[in-house]
Length: 112
Length: 112
Length: 112
Length: 112
Image 1 (cartoon, rainbow over the protein chains, first blue to last red):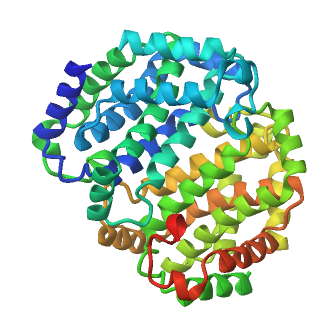
Image 2 (tube, rainbow over the protein chains, first blue to last red; image 1 turned 180 degrees about the vertical axis):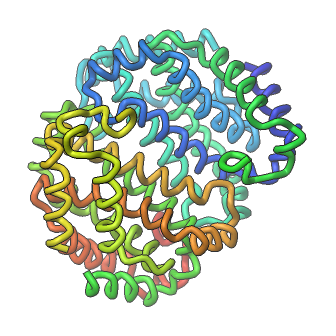
């Protein structure tokens, strides 16, 4: 992961793009790239979407990477370690959605 | 990173949530969480957004983690390694935005 | 529609919010509100989503209105008539997706 | 507005697309189109975004129309009148953001 963060920084700095990559602009770009990823599955049924992902792994990987790159950049810019943030959030989620109550229930996120 | 992927899988499987976490539903959730991250900076100027991020690191880290968790899950479900996807995409981006042409130009992404 | 545009302007100006409502900020807010609308259907099957909409008409109407208000404001700010824009776009779409080719096909939007 | 709703229905039904246009799929498409509208302003400063909108009115109008068409369709599918929904929501917003408290304050939406 450290290597990936380093490469992302290099890519940005070689192009002198830090001037555009403030937190607000990066958050905008994360949302735009997330919508492009979603567009891969637009109008498809659950099954068609699964098949589409299998048949277009490189395109899906590229879209996932586009979101991930800006996400890692935003975290790096404000001094957040993404892996540490994930571990910390998983602990909060575990407290919010106890196994015995959340098991097999899709309503989990809103009404538990 | 492997450890983080493993924890995300465990969190999902302990709750029997794989049934909801197909690629289309995960892509939807990534977009929703990306918008919540963007909401942190809504109506703020560039400078206010930067200050807000500094003053609310835990909230920002949580929102980044929410996007990252679903992104890693989607990648894992279809057999994509996120770090490898990022390295591969950075190479493509480097070819698409040559340093000498892209340096310091915000129009890069659309009209280069 | 004219009456609605007028009311939206009044609401904004009574609060002196024009200073925040530039095109970029409005486009951000449209995306955020669109994600909140989408959140109503998160994790639900097609059928559950349809039932949810029927059972929560006021909440759905409020979310639709939130998107619509910012959309109308953005249009109004730059001098675009939304109804005219829709009529014009439908004509372009009709040329892009001829009835005989597009009928009953979900691939329409990407690969026709 | 009635005429616009009628045209949108005709466009959809001539192509037999109602089968794809359930509420969840339409909400996804609204979010995708909202991100495309936002992309018009990506990386731009507030001033550059305003100028860009002025210089590209037809492109902006098309993107606004794309969001509006799916939004009107979703409302129509579940029996919601968009103009009525807007009027109703503006009344709620007026109660939530009283003029004397909200005037000139960007924090309005979150912490008032």
